[in-house]
Image (cartoon, rainbow, N blue to C red; front, side, top):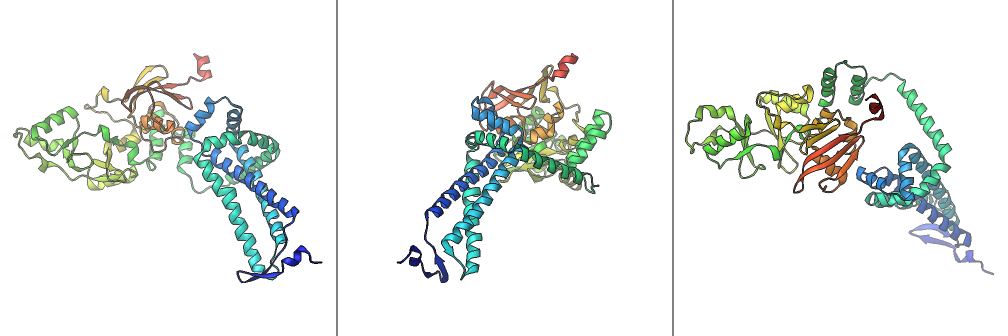
Length: 451
């Protein structure tokens, strides 16, 4: 009597001498379990990608929801180290199970005894490819495009798993903390900028002014031109087609010592006009060719480090640079004074007027800021922790840009956004441009008691 295995003799497959065995019910069950484990692995990988890529706007949406899933998600996010260890535990256990069962399935279906190298390649390459594609890559792509939906979908299952694996997670976190402390106890030869900044905060000069200057020096090397520049909308310039009378009026209205000269648009800057160069020619007629007095402009990319820019200013003996973006368009201008103010603070002279201040104090812990206030200036004015802004600023350079970055959309008048202990409220709009922002600082309980 012929058995089923007799119908699967030695055969040549792609030039290889291998034997195929029949598919039994037990093997079908193994295939089903492997598929289920792959699905679980994909869910864990997607959960890792979604939970740890949530933007601040997504977290605000979670806070507004009152469902069981949203509450579970917020509880998980409050202890990210336990969440991550749970995901890693489950994912690795499932992946190991997949590898073991896939090896068993392969050995049960295919006999590679005559072609051991082919068997090794099949089990390593094919199984690894399937595991990476279905268990890692595709789930993470889906979770990255729909993070909030994935977070809510996995919230309750992860909450159960988090409680189940809490003892193991605690051991893992405790051991990691122990290793970190042992490594930290060894003398380090290099010190980072963050370490230096923290050291200044703890042991630096007692006076606030000296401490601020030292911190300004520490942050100096990491600051880019785009962070301190005067934005394009506030740049004073004049078209080269204007006559001399129009130029003199523009000079009086602007109050600046330097103006950009451009052809039709600020994206086509022809040079920089120093007002002092006009003094010998003030009596000239309107037809005077003032273009001859314009000096060659100096262009820098928006990601130019200001410590390098300061050195270039010194070498070239100039005080102003035009900041351009990756497309060559004008973003704004940065001056020598802007750079120095990053170290010593605001530099005021007789030409600086009160209306140039970008904020007013409305009442205690309440301020009204111009939307165009640079984030660097905002941090200094209210002593805002830099790391709080850095987490959410993205590409934003101004206070208005920060709110747009957090919301991910245009804001309406009266709309509020909370970041830490700071509440931002849109106070005035000009079409879609945020003109004024009311900032309220939450008063700590201990401050209330002191009062």
